[in-house]
Image (cartoon, rainbow, N blue to C red):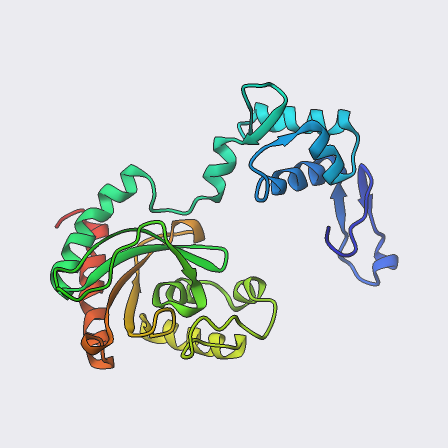
Length: 271
């Protein structure tokens, strides 16, 4: 529950009460539905009684809301008929780009070209809250190489792909993801403050690529550029990762140029 929430069918604060010209509306039934949807982030299944207890609402209200979500595909009733779990529409809203068969097929030529150009392991990565998730990739043929881990998540602020995707957001959006000044220190070389992160994001916006030097995994350096995508959920980063002895700053900058050439294939549809 957020601070200052007003309950009621439609609650409105007057301009005089707020001391300004902005009005605050809260629709209770919509608020209840949204809060119930949030429960599926932490619960695999929910019964009507469990939902009612967690939200402190009546069982009849919980049942109506769950039935409404079921009708729109945001919840599915389990085989017992008593519990509900997240439906396809809710899963689709929370899943970033890059996992669908059509997108992966389009990206295939880009990844094939990128691993050929750079000689290193390349990955496509998407932003999920303050994490990035590897959606696909190609592994280097070097005997000593970075392993590809599809579906693996990493803190966005400590990775080249994550910082690249954060740089595509506004400062206000980044501050929403990181409300505290202190950042979790993943490795000794990782950024530890939001101010340092924001400063680095400004630099990324200027040069068009992001670097990570042992910030998520010691001994591994990476560079990332942007792939096409109009909205936040559609944006992907193209990342090349290598052992540090093959990834000094000069090599990383050179790979950024190669990755851009590969990324351009997504717009032409040619390999």
